[in-house]
Length: 392
Image (cartoon, rainbow, N blue to C red; front, side):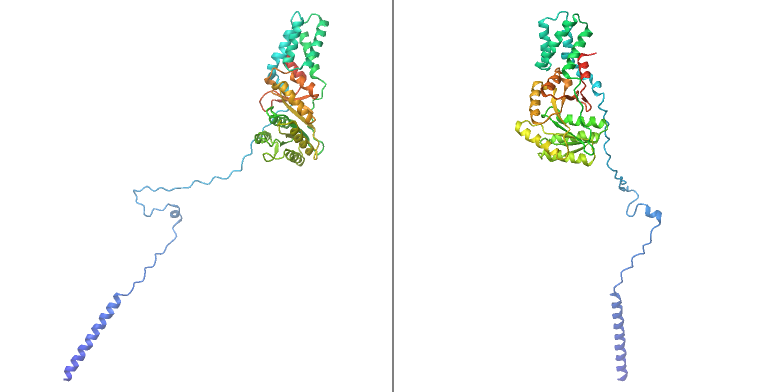
């Protein structure tokens, strides 16, 4: 019996041992494997770092690498090259050919009539009509015809040179050779000279202002421009272009702003930068004489709070003839005109307007426009003008 019990105990112990071994095997199979450690990354050699990556690219595939262009250095803006205008001296001599149209009627026409063998009343009537047709004016024409008749009677026979001399003498007498045509643009100590430019739109007023600035810059003067024609944005832009080309600073205001304020600021700027001259372009509207008088009067009064107005230039279109004369008379009643700038004198056969406008207004022609080029504005020289009319 005891041996039987001992056998059972031995079998039970063996079963327990077998079960424990199985349990241990199962536990080991369920054990979680720790994640693998990442491979150690070593820095690539310098030559490999410079080479483009090739991982994942087959040898038969074309590798396209986009290389950004090198950044261009930022260059400072280049200032436009300033133009260097020629000086005003001698301009009219260089522009004599531009007077060819006036020469045809007023010059050669009169020379042909006065050179006839017999000067009867009909010929003198033709001479008078020629002078009036050239806008010399009725009163100056009558004076010239009377003087010519007297001189022809004294001379008797006339050679072509004598006829030319007679006509030259009379034209110069009517234009005036001893008239002061100086343009007052010399600064007074620390104060710049102030030029006020007036005239109706369409006469070339703003263009004349720009050309005058070029002429003064060509004479070595420092110029400031005032765009006081605030009712036309194109006028201020046009003046800005003229100023930029020669380095003349332009003072302008808002469109529709107060012209007197712009004129005042322009003079103040001229004093700050020690300019030699300030040229103020004004509005050219002629709605009513009263409105024009108030506007121009205000501009002048405001300028005179800072400086005196040295010149008031009236710009007239030579091609308008007697219509231009009526405009001139209106402006003469508004402001004290000191000189006339006669534009488009190269495009008219009525060169006699130089005589009539001076006689009507009592002020000299100081500047003439003889073309559309930027340097075709010239100081008026009576002798050069008459010689150009009569031809060589």
